Length: 457
Ligand SMILES: [Zn+2]
Image 1 (cartoon, rainbow, N blue to C red):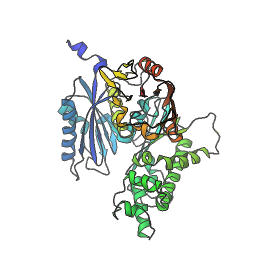
Image 2 (image 1 turned 90 degrees about the horizontal axis):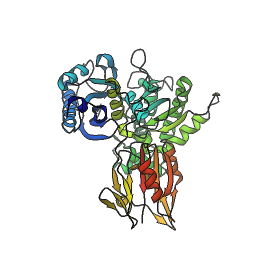
Image 3 (image 1 turned 45 degrees about the vertical axis):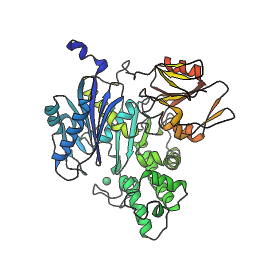
Image 4 (image 1 turned 135 degrees about the horizontal axis):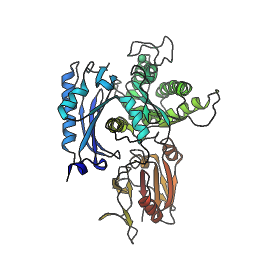
């Protein structure tokens, strides 16, 4: 293999790291956005930068070791203020990486160019590249976690501001004189609607003598309240949890209205564990507030969507940034690299085959071109109808396909529940229902980023 073909664009890979307050996630990402290797480790506690930098280097070393393609650049996302041209972390409020020249250090260590960005900014870039905002010209993404961060991308470029602090949506003041925020100001969005604010308000309600099912669900320890437990409490119609989440949703809805009035993006993408787990509760309230806007606009649009990349938004945004950094712009038209989808064939007996492997009950294929049996994922059938619920879509739709093919044997009909259809709409995923033989053909011929559920019998 000569040097030139080794460096041809098609097989390039990128090593990326999402440095979080609790975990460091490294990944190896190819040009089509497929994650080929991962390394996850806890973020070392403490104020010293060295243990954190060592963990970042360990994670990168591990994914680089697994690469079968030449890695041409490193992308890194950090929760704080960064100075990308200087590769400098200016300040990280929740970890000890302030004043750290991470770009120069990693460049020297790995002998690769390094692109640095703010994690939430990169989340927006990820959603624009492969997620719910892939078809939009402009997107504001809002990530609701321990804090609330954001990113604004217009015409495939991040807007970072004059001082590298644009899109700090968590610190817009939503209640003058309100509760003190981690940043020191009062009444910030983050102090009212982040997952820590939600947890704080629930603990305050309990301390004030209100009774909630959370006390039973968490055996009295309300220090950490997971998103899945919040959803469970909402499904059990817990009044205190519903009240606190409703209030957070209202504040977020008004923040979306503010985003609309300030930037008027084509879409707003909301992400974060609590929003994704409790979307049935959050979204109707947020939609109602955004739709109640009395200020007229020249055109329709301004939709509020949910992240289709979830935890991978920052990782994929870091890969997009690394690609831009070395002149391999993922947004250049006509240069959309697709994952290597397997060819699927229909065997005479009604079975489906991928390569040599047979899937008797059908299969699903993800946007990352992974095929899995439907056996672990049974779909209920009654009177020739296959009922699709949200839970059937979560795995096949991971990674944000543009189009989902649903194929069923002739005589059978797919029936999407309202919640399932809403799940797809909220992630800008189109869907096409066809008899399995036609769906297989359409899937094999498609030139889109696609996923499928093929049911055969
Ligand atoms: Zn603040």
